[in-house]
Length: 385
Image 1: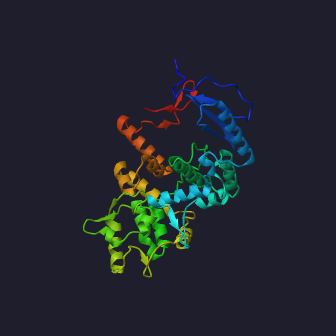
Image 2: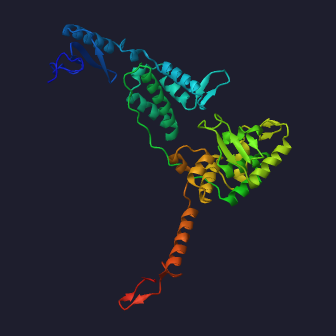
Image 3: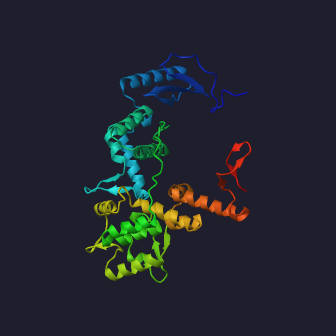
């Protein structure tokens, strides 16, 4: 039998109060109150063993809520701006790569400005699921892709989790995430790659070749310094912190790519970065890339499609997935599989392999259909074994 003296034991429910009047009950000797503010449940101890004290407290809280003057709990005083500052501090402390610095010296994170425009001035208690849905509707009206909106929602949810960890909140609203488009399926066959490379400016050809053959991210390629390259060991060594996931990585060099880098080194003896143009490190080349793709008949191709191609080529070549993931820098198999895209050519290759297997097992005509076969019951299609 539960004891009324047990501080963790809730006594029998008290007399039901009217809708909107909140709830009062006792845990052990102490009376507690419960009420709703902006659709969110709030529980608070009266710190008293006398019921009249709890009744006065809940009347005061309900009055404050009705007047828009909420002073308890602490979450009622937390603002969106404060949560945003904590998020940026967390990104800086953990050296997250998505933290960027503006020209005026301020910091921001991609997809954060959209949240700032909508929720600036909000108190956290007012950021309910309904408010989040209103933000989603606004972004959709602006033409934002579902994936882009989800990235913003993920940042907002991270803010709430940080506030919860700091003891500033008691709960987190429900976040209705949107269904995203399937992974992009862009990739290049070798003949398309050769045609594209011929149309590219000379200073972009080595960059594109490295992307195609290794599946490296563009940011990793453009950030390479000659100190990362060992011609003796025929490899590129990516330092910890220079990759997206922060882990060091080794990229083997062979054949065409190794020779290209030797040529680049001869052309830029005193350069710090592998890829430079007119003495300056290459940073952005969207215009040159877009023009070359158009001339090659590959409109809409992204440089990131080379990464998908590199991953698929490694798998096609028979490289074990664990080794391919080590080269491409994928930490999880789920993400790796998004890049290992099956094409129409893969399906046809699979069919040819099946036919070859059946022929080896049962003869050259195994599995083929003879359209001229017939029986006494009429002309029919029969399978020749």
